[in-house]
Amino acid sequence: MEKEIRKQKKEINAVFIILFVVFLAYTFIILFSLGWGFLTSLKSADDFEINRNILAFPSLKTDDVDPFNSRNAFFQLENYVKIISNFKVVQKQPFYRGEVLVTHSCEATIGDMLVNTLLYVGGGALIYAFMPAFTAYLCSKYDYKFSSVVFAVYTFMMCMPIVGAYPTELTFLRNAGLYDTIWGNYLQKMTGSGMYFFVYHAYFKGVSNTYREAAEIDGANEFTIMFRIYFPLAIKIMSTVFLIQFVALWNDYQTPLLYLPTHPTLAYGVFYLSYFQLHEWYHTTIKMAGCIMLVIPILIIFIIFKNKLMGDVSLGGIKE
Image (cartoon, rainbow, N blue to C red; front, top):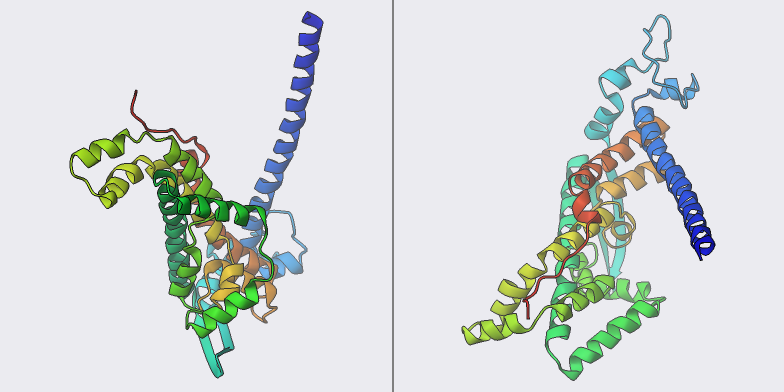
């Protein structure tokens, strides 16, 4: 018996060691990538390309010793200043609204991209945090056949991938005048479905109905019960979902590329900087500066709220 226990412990220890090595290597790769990108953003294009200074620290020698040094890029943050001062996303998007040809265009600076990012990310994260909670509450606390139908439909949507919906969706948005608008993008997100619907549903299902009964005795209506009793109990889950979605949307460039072509976000700007080989912006050092500018805000948010993002969720309830 003792031999079997020791054997199991050895097997468990071996698994933990392998996992530790894998995660350690993964962590090293992530940290190395961030560190390399940051150092590269502090180099001049000449230092990186002519001196072939790929992995070393930026050259800080004087001009008479090294004419291709990185002194300006390092001490004056030259690459970052160039992006903030001069970088623009110039886009022209023609499309048909019915039989009418419509053209949207933009010349967005970094400031414009920041505003678009806050609208897209902040509004989208709020919708993704609230709408699944709203639909999950209705399905879990109202025992009707329609609630079961909605739950079944959302389950089917999770299990079966919907392929080929993009052309139809795009045509509808264009004909409805919602294409390439922030409000149209908000409406797209108001489905109330997705993985977090089931998280909220399980939570509200586990919260006692005693709250509802006590509130009804005191004369509270359904909206009061939902918004002043049950939603405050779920605020920890909602705030966690908001943060997770905020991080995901911050890094999302594909949705703005498809649905908001003339409302570029910062992530869209980095894609534009990397994908289009523009004369002034094709240097790797400039591209790395753009990437670091995108990473730093979300990295700060993660450091501040890491316990919220990676913590557990506790249920509130009444002792019975």
